[in-house]
Image (cartoon, rainbow, N blue to C red):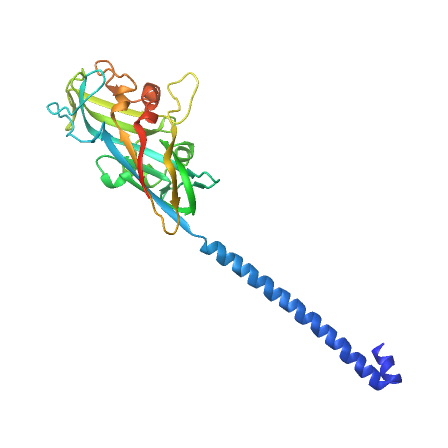
Length: 305
């Protein structure tokens, strides 16, 4: 068409060509501007997502016996009995601890946070072992929490299916690191309470090679992660939900510390334990009455905002 116009009227053809080129250039520039704008918007969105603040909270498990900090005695100490049960039976504690996992937070306006859990041969992310003999283990830092207001925290006492079925796990789940592992069917010990009880009928036993069971020994190992009908295997995992009392803020300017009191006395009082007949527990079924006391052992005491 342009060639025919050029033969008939060269000046008109040149004007036509210039107009066509101008329109084409406008389209090209417009499309380029749209593309640049789209890239800029995408980059801004990415920057906003990257700049969205993630906060943290420190959960401090305060280990106590009643209103007093938990005192540890040497294993086999039958002289110093620090505590009494509601049945007026004297005892002391030489070892106390528990596994805690599966932390979640929730808020009044729909805020939510679930800590990532992953058990591999190298590590055990989201699993913690709190031991009275290791005070630093009582401090658990939860990070990467979306900024907002929160009024509840939930966690599980024990190690669930993911941690058991992952196979040989690292970190606090690795038996080579002192993990409290029974076997695949029973899983991990969720809580240990060991010491001496004045009314325990346990006699001294020399096991040879320098190993022995002290007289008056009491030893409670509570665990189990699944129910198997007609067997000794029961699920003693307990998920607890504690209120902060009032909403707390987590964000760029706020890193609160929550104090959760863990009282060992309800372990014996709420189960109505009698040391004369119950002083050695090492199976999921036998531990079920004590797992039922976990809810009364863990209490949200206060939060530093």
